[in-house]
Image (cartoon, rainbow, N blue to C red; front, side, top):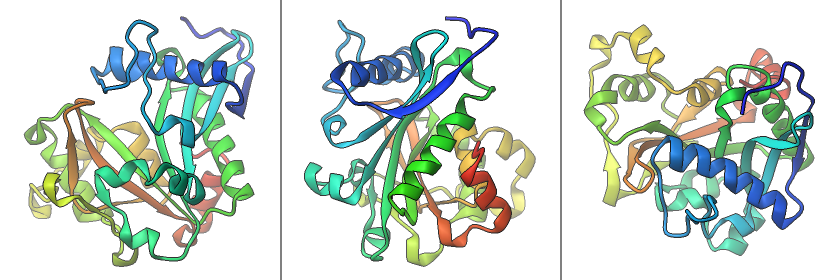
Length: 254
């Protein structure tokens, strides 16, 4: 699918089963076919990437109305939705106590992806703008969610992981920590030996977008063999954003 010369984007939440399947179909193209992920509930015959949490999330869809196709997705979960699901999705990978016991309104973000033909353009701008409206409507104060490096070879990404740990580690009051059974240290390279420019070039675009917004990472990474990724937990505290970051968050984001 080549992106058309003229696009007309619409961001809205999934309302029907067909809407949800459109999101899961795009996720299958990206997470399964492109990145080599899997999962117990993935439907290869129908080409749908799904899991048990999908019924509890709100699914934000980016439609290219000129094509009549979903070209970007985000799924988001509030505290009340997590209670209905029994937990946040990220709880399997990270101890979220620091933010869940803060008494603040939190939102989990996940399964963010954009069709390859729409990357590097305005698609993420529109997705982030829709997300900002959702956050304002629900008066969210802290956002979090796992984001991934492709692959599970930690040695290959030691430098970018170390950069995140040394320069973007979350403050104590919102610092989540990878679960003990799968805790992977991120301080694999001393800060004095880092080539910061080279390390930053190796950090995925979505993670860099959160950093530009003033985001932090939790302590430790999680190796996800099911999805063939190395995950970090990103945290964005809206109260800690400066004026410039707030403008990005309310408008462009990435």
